[in-house]
Length: 288
Image (cartoon, rainbow, N blue to C red; front, top):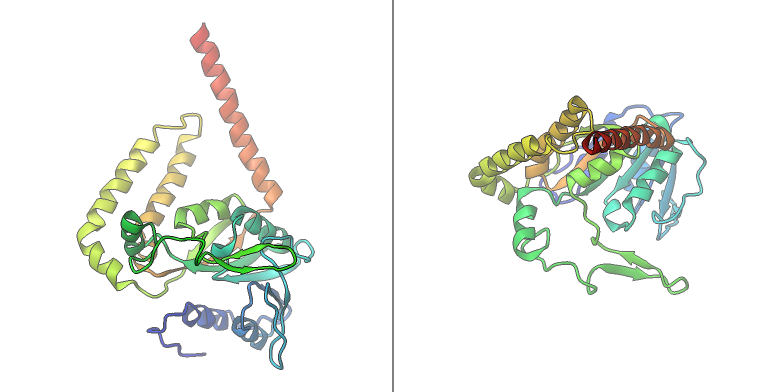
């Protein structure tokens, strides 16, 4: 197993040892998107996996080749064909993140894993930076047309964006949940020293604010089952306050596909129908 230098900036020093720890992957099919320079692809191949490598800028070489694949479009892959998807530093470039995760759900086998990484804008440093400059780091200006468009396709005139769609942890958690990814392992990454330093002083305020919001919000949406509502809201409260959220520089989650997308829609529809029935009944009682 590799011995990565944890002082290095890249998320790969955490992801690649995790891939190696997965053991023998013979017979497994992996989708690596965006596959970049192919380092993750090559590690998966060493583990015995069959790897499909896709990127908007495909490469061809002696040890690694990739094909064209755009995360903003449907992928030319059969339903339930993939055992593992790895999406490193990709989702923050995609305008329609819901449909990307929906597509991942379509092609991933039930019980399969989605390994996803993205810059963490929910750590304390990023929260404070956003307060003052609307950027994830106080050394940077907010996103503009200067640096938010990394490439324009000459034929289609299509934009390929930079970090214009950075996503907070609870937004990502919700998008994953409504796309059938309910079991998530939150992996550790590089610690933000400035977040830790500021956290020594302001963590109590985060704690108090989240607990107050939890108790206040449990009083809303009265038509939702109380135990279910409390469970969901408390999970989000804990995610807000977790060490990996507040003090780590990257999100590195391993997400299991528990449900097909159609099953999730059916479950949400039932909840919405129950809400509608309760609202109608309540209004009829008020009229009487």
